[in-house]
Picture 1 (cartoon, rainbow, N blue to C red):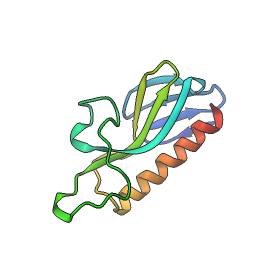
Picture 2: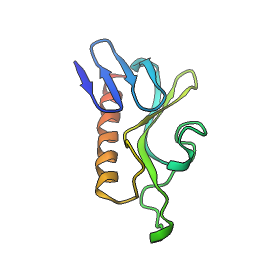
Picture 3: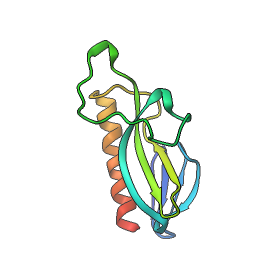
Picture 4: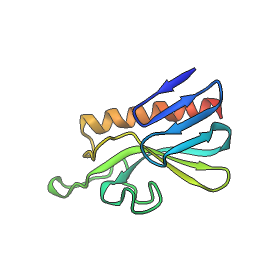
Length: 117
């Protein structure tokens, strides 16, 4: 069965996943060591390892100085490679409806990957 999202396609029959937005490529689900739903500071996307610059959920940020971010997944593979899956298609602000929806989708993807690894 295929689970298709904007940023990733998970093929549970062949136990593979293809990242469409992030660290593009096809990978084996069995090679996943750990998977976390996180938020990455928007200005660092593509500049460093995926989700190296995180914005912690629930942190107090004052109005005008609230940084934009991407919700997604940081996937650590057994060989040490770090993969990023960006669920947010554009930068979002913390505690907005769009950020909540993106975070929910990241959790849903994480659960599917963990079920089949």
